[in-house]
Length: 365
Image 1 (cartoon, rainbow, N blue to C red):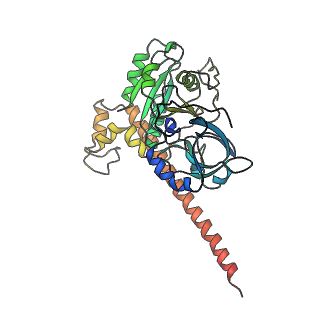
Image 2: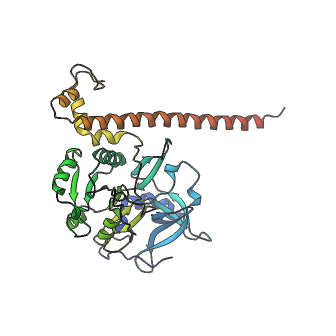
Image 3: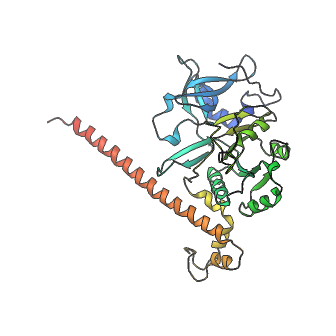
């Protein structure tokens, strides 16, 4: 066990309240408590083991224990324990405490697996807000920001865009206006972890559990250290040529914040593939609103008469770049859906063949 991480004594009764524990979770956990298990939240997951935050009866606060995750492994990757999950821990297990059960997730940030894989990868679980970090050290890629916003909306948690490294540019306000135009309904903040500008506003907007996502070099680790008030994450410099970063953060880690709430820092994402599709409707909400005014309810917005989307593009109300980005992400989602359906069908066929062989083996000649 590590040293106890004390929680504000003014917090509600449970020592885990500062980490997001609620009365609803208390009721959900009741049967597991009767079985002698202990509630905890995953702060970090490595191969086969995890850091779990649990209540410390001796101090009335919380402490971190190292636990074996293997009892919960073996199924689909998206159902494996992930940072932010609430779990039931068997503290009496040897040689390490062991995860005995995973509580149902309220939500999760899930991206498509790397390359041509169609499975999903969970980045963080049970989050109240997704912070999308974008560096101002280079010209922001609006299309990539749209991907991150769709990924965030997909999780069910609202996004907030954080434009970092504001101390390196003179036109941060103009960039913010550009980002606001492609982020309907989303707050966009400009901050500098070096000078402290904008950090107070950001701190006031990060109650509960916030997950921090973005590309390598976006300043996520530096921002995490600034919000935590201590050097919790290692930091590396970006390349001078293209301002691209190196993977400083290599795992997802849940970090308590001094003003309340917790932050889940995640490794930089080179690929931002969506896994689902519902987030597109919110990330491109103005296109969805225009589509509702099209003459045909199944309008593809290509060449149909009475298409309100095409009319908005012709009038300059809807930028062509924005529509092209929407179409590209929609095509990717359709591909993922088809691959996922094929993968599930293949898995069902494999299970059916296995059961058939088992049944034939029981038949005696």
